[in-house]
Length: 226
Image 1: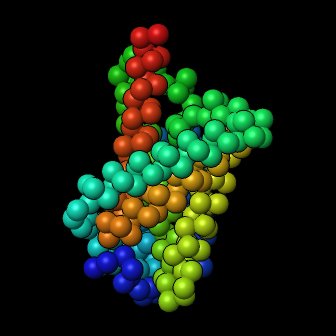
Image 2: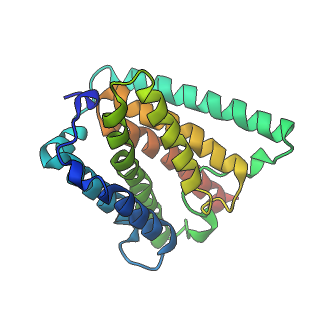
């Protein structure tokens, strides 16, 4: 099944989507003291998908990616990095903002004890939470796409809504740093496109995992040896 072919099976449950999304986002972002907070994005994202699409289609959304998925993901990643570089360079010079303050982490790296086992666990939990954002975003964006896919600009509207929403989600994470929020908003466009290009949510998950894992891992090494 292609993601483009997915159909809403329970329209009466659509009202649950914003509720589940807000609760999932709130727990993941502000309830750091809860032991299973890092699973919130996955739990509420999957709940939203299940409520609207049912289990069979939700399961199919995570099917193996269609080949040549590696080529597609590499191209999307390179385009994402180019777009991020161009926009942040423009903003730092044209708008007088400090792009160098941008951090592509989902949490403050200084909160990790990277040299300890506990730090490694926190690192892994952070990646689980970050990739769970794909399920959480899909629970909102796929119903929008399902309703608009027959329209000429259906996909474009879906990408735009996802970009804006993802940027707003990170306002508190990045302490209202506009450059950082716009950067992740741009990245969201390519993460969402990865779903459609690979016909699986795994495309966005793997791209998200690679980006966050790379940057957090590099930060871990820098904090350990410098």
